[in-house]
Image 1 (tube, rainbow, N blue to C red):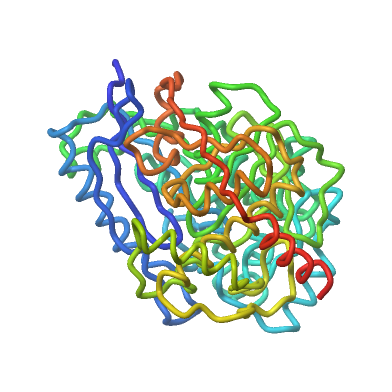
Image 2 (tube, rainbow, N blue to C red):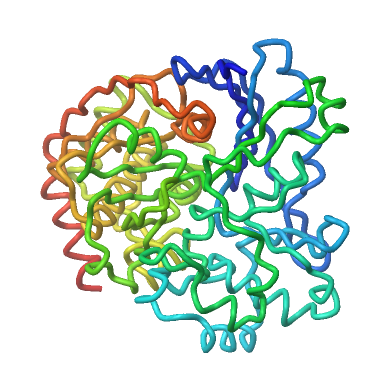
Length: 457
C-alpha cells in the first residue's frame, strides 16, 4: 500500500492533537486539538485517558475520507508510562509527572537509582524520572501493582490501544527515565532493582509497524483492516528526526513547546553536567544525543499570561526600553528544571507595560536557551523548532548571544513533531527550506548583566 498521508496522534503535556501530514511536502494538511486534562481524583493526579481516546477515535474517523490517510503514527511527551493488567486494562491510572511524592518515598528511590554515568539521566523532581514514578506506584499502591503484567512507554500505550501489540521504544525509555543505558542501548540496572525487569514489554524500533488496527477499531473509524500503526516515539525526538535524515552533525536543534529541549547532535557525552539538567536523549535510530533543557514554554506562558503578542513599532520601542533599563527576569519561573537549579525567579526592574513584559520574557527564554546550548557543545548551526521559531525577539536574541547561525524552517507546519512521527511511516524526509535569523543588535551588555547575576548568585 502506498502511503501518501499519515495520521499522527500527537499528545503533548498541554494539548493533544490529531494531525494529517502530507508525506510529500511534510506539511500538516488537517488537524484538530483538545486540552490534555489532568484529573485530580484518586489515587493521584492522572491523565484523562478515555477523553483522549474518544478524541483520537473521532478524529481518525473524521479524517478518513478527507484528506484521508494510509498509516497511523504516534508521538507523545515523555516522563509517562502505562501499567497494564492481564486483561490489557490500566492497572493504575497514567500518572501526571508533575505530581510530587512523600519525602520518605523520594529518599528511598534516591538510594535505588543508578548513577548518572550509567544512565546519563539526572535526578529530577516530581515524576520527571519515570523510574521514580514506577517506584512510587509500586510502593504506595502495592495491591494494585501486583496486578501489573506489562509496563509500556506512553506513545506505545496508544499503539497498543490501536493494535493490541505491547512494546517499549528507546526514545521514550531514553528520555531521563533512569531505565536506559544510552551508551549500551539496553535497559539499566534499575528495572532489576525495582523488581520489574520481567514485566517491561519488549523494545521495538520506532520505525516498526506494530500491526494493523484491531478489527473493532477499524470498524469504528471506517478503515480497512490492513491500516498500519507505527510504534511511535518521544515528541522532542520526533522534532529531531527530520534533521537527522537531512544533515550531518555537529548541529543543534532547539525543540520548543512546554519544554525547550536543546539537542547537541555530535556533542560529547562525557562533558555533561548532571547538576544542570543535562541528559542524554536517544534518537529514533537508537543513538545517544547529549541534551539540555528547561521548562521554557511553561515559563513563557506564566510570564506573559493574558498578553497578546505585540507587533510593529510598539515592539521596537519596548525592546529599546527593556535593553536600556535592564528589565531582566532571573531564573526560574518553574522550580526544579533547567541550567540554574534551585533559584527562585524574580524581576530585576519590573516591566511597565504588557509589551515590555513580552519582550523581556522572550529575551529570558533566549538567554536560558543559550545557556542550555553551551552545555551541549555550542554548534555553529542551530535549528529552532516549534512555537518559539515564530518569536522574532527570541530567535534574533539567540543568534546574537550564541554567535550561531540560527535557522527557522519556512514550512507552513507549526512544528516538526508531527512530521517526525510521520517519517516513521514515510521514511524519506522532504527537503525543507530555512531562513537564517538576523542577530539582534545591542543585546551584549544586557546578556552580560544577566549572566553576571546568574553566575554569581
